[in-house]
Image (cartoon, rainbow, N blue to C red; front, side, top):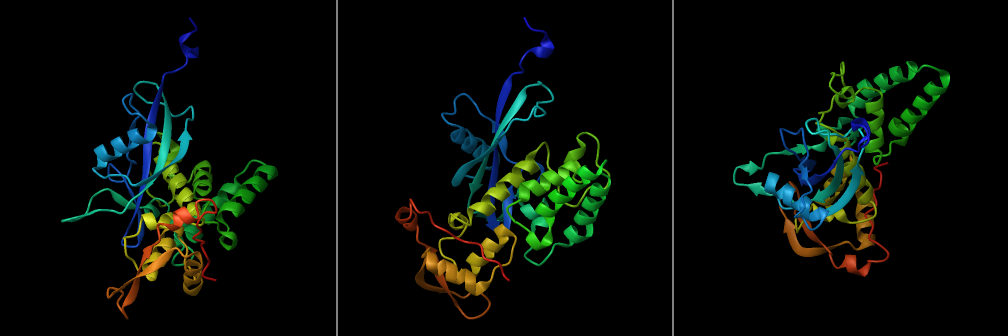
Length: 310
């Protein structure tokens, strides 16, 4: 037999869910343990498929049924091992979209704004203060601390690609988090030793914040070429509500006229004939998503482009 150190460790398959809803015009993710964990659990032998196993675990832990689901990514780093058993953990993550259910006592517990974890990603009100006041100065010090000129150039280039205000790309959520992790600026980077003076942004156990960043990035990219935003909308909505939803997910303000022109050109919605008096001004027309458009454009695809406010 090979020495114990060379024997392959047993592998356990873990399923994680990034379950997103729009609550009060804010993108929120369903969590456990006061926001420290994503819903997760092992893939069991009696589950016929991975997605069946995921649905079973999410519904068991959160009492919340899943709607739209797609696989995100598989994480299998060597460092992912259970502390007690030593088994290597292979984590298969999923993105799920849902319309949050409101109970008699208000919103069910566990929903957290994803900007609580990534405050530098919310540009709806302009450049986030945390970015200019804390993230960028700390990254520049990290660049200056590099051991040689080549390393400094590499670090500066990566900072410019991922964090430059003039060329901000809202899809690079994961790359930005991983750069901050490498720079030792987030609590998770310290492992068992606390990071001194970490950046604002709630940490999560294990690598769940990395998984969450992957889900946010996927959804931000997806709303530009598939109308998945309607999975988060109520059956009837105003165009203003739809714009707020897209802005919340993208973390960017949109030009109102351009956005409405794009919606009209795509033929994604139709009037219901009713109006809403909840807009605070003149009654606004209510619309519904033309779900049949998914069949009409099964080959070409349906776009919901993200236009800038400027």
